[in-house]
Length: 501
Image (cartoon, rainbow, N blue to C red; front, top):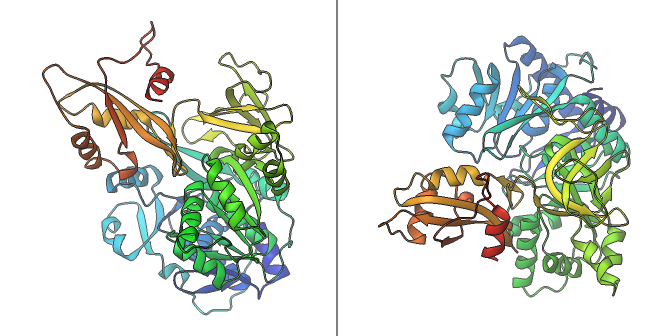
């Protein structure tokens, strides 16, 4: 197994079909052009000393090229979050050297003189030698080779490198996508960032199905709507925050119908979808099938789906139990098993909250330098909390380890608390996520001040903003006399959350 076999099959079946279009520049690549450039880049990678192929940039035509060239060359593809601070990026790059780094022109100088790093401009990656050299399909087929390394934050805020082997990614695609199932006129709009597992899954699934991918490098509701109409997009995937902005943008124009009958399918995921948002969206897009997909980096993307029929049945039902399913993430995909377990690791009854465990061929659960957390029976602890109803519908209920999920981005309470604790007036602090219609969750903080110190909510927000990304700034801050702890000194975040309302 190798992800390259997916591209090889597509190139053999429809070489002249447009594979990718950069929505910002209008540049395109056919499947044959992509295949030949991937082969050319793979030869150059093999001739270098690089052990990793790193991408630090927004989505462009260089994104699928980087993913497949890495697979052909036999080294891991490592997309990095370009929204991280310079210091955070440098620490990650140090962990993956020696490597080839593909980045934007304005960032090249920052990395040019680093030892063990070959730096390329994203636009130069697409350059073609013009040689018609025949390509040997000589990529490895060892399913255990690492295809992708994705950095994901844990409860401590220290990034972990999730290892996805070729067998995991290919198993997911073969189990969820039918080869060459897309008509030549079908187009998919991809606006999730390339460092997200959903972005990688979108590339692989679209290529295998033969669907044209239109890339939106930087999301805005206005541009999303424009590209959907311009390219007659038939399939799209968004996070809940994006869908909320699209709905608001349409409503601001007075629209009661999005007038996109060509948009056959709209998938969403990456966070909790507020009920009012999905209900409005289904009214604005009456000709569109909605799907809610839930998955994790460690599971090679989607493990459960709330499909179009589930959406329609929930909206049409007068039974509150059925209507409630509209905020679920559906049922497990074929080949995937899901369990809910308590703190002792025992499976719980239906409608009981616990930690979500998952098992299947696409599940990795393995981290570089840390080994696997999959148990002897193949079960992976997701650290997400949830429950299953009697019919197997999965409901998410936050993170078992209290990670805040804001707009599809995982935020560590611990790293925000560490920053706040450096303020001279702060004696103790608890950071939690609270429900937010726009973001799914927003950041809230409870502060215990030192004696004889005073500080305002605005001052603390500015303090965090100066030291971290804006998404980490608490939107709500309260001042308490003390924080609740149990007898062993563990902070009772549940109590904090309940008191904050």
